[in-house]
Amino acid sequence: MYPSETGGLLRLMGGNVAVNPASSPSTGPRPGSRPATKMPSKPKRRPRNTSGLPGATEVTRAGMIWVALSAGLILLVLLIIFILQNQDRVTVNYLGVSGDLSLGMALFIAAVAGGVLVAIAGAVRILQLRRQRRHLQASAGPAAGGHEPTSGP
Image 1 (cartoon, rainbow, N blue to C red):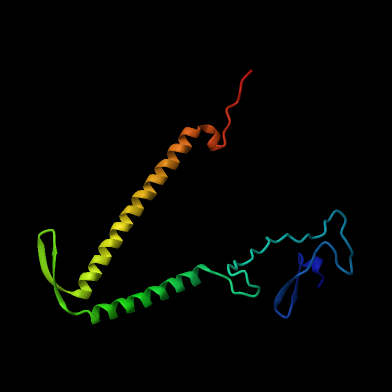
Image 2 (tube, rainbow, N blue to C red; image 1 turned 90 degrees about the vertical axis):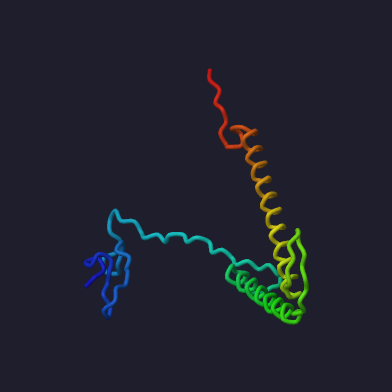
């Protein structure tokens, strides 16, 4: 069976093999048929190599997450060791409220409170910058949006 009789497919051992129906060794090119052209493939994106060393491995999102989780687990272990080694009871006074806590837990609570304050200050700054960018884009007018006014005759 010739490829031209099967619509360009040739059966070999139960599998399909694509053959160019425009020409075959026995019939030659058909009149009015175009040769099959290969579609250009997208250029492959090279993986990021942030070290600058040749042969270094690529940096992936999964790799960055793995490193961040590993660092977080190490810090958590160090924090647990710190809390367990500082079990001395201390009296903590804050805004008229007093209580007895272990020293490690009191310092941990103070660190978390400081982190929350830094996060709030960062969020406020991000909101300020977003508002400033929107204001600048609105004051720039249509030119910032890529639309130019058309002048009439």
